[in-house]
Amino acid sequence: MKNKFIHIITAIIICTSLFLLFSCGKDQYLEKRSGPWKITNVEIAFYKNYSSTPDSVVTYSSDTTGYFNFYNGTPANVYVIIHYPSRFLIKDYEATYEVHEQNHAILVISNLVGSNWVDHKFTVSGYNKRKQDWTIISDDYAGNVVRETISVEKQ
Image 1 (cartoon, rainbow, N blue to C red):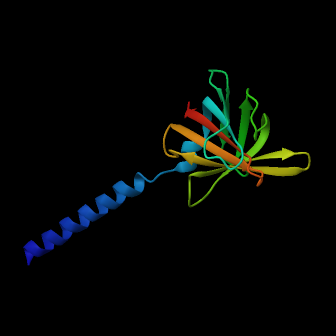
Image 2: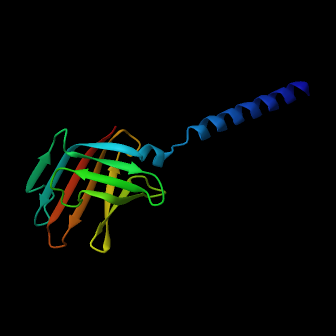
Image 3: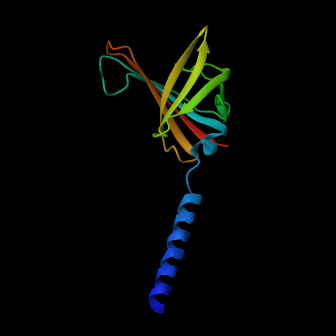
């Protein structure tokens, strides 16, 4: 009987330790997102006539291409500082951002253009990593597509 009691106590201690270990290591994604992200590379590809290969590609790669600075809050703000001709984003100190609650691979950056908010939905590859690629696509439904991929690195 005493042996059985010791095994039960040991099992409870092990289960509690494992629970604490895994719950303390829980991903705090918005905290990881906050702060400056440096743009390391930008690729803008143009597709025509429903082609699967781009007709032309423009690449910007420089230490001064720009950065994003994320601030948690209500609303969650992001300063968009870009020094390249983006097909989607504008330089904006008042932009907001949202990360999908269940799918961290979706990042929405919203700019106020005139009196309307414009949402730009990015697909984030490697969303838990310090180096990420954000991709956004625009389709005019006439066979012309523009894809912009922004490579960023957490500072």
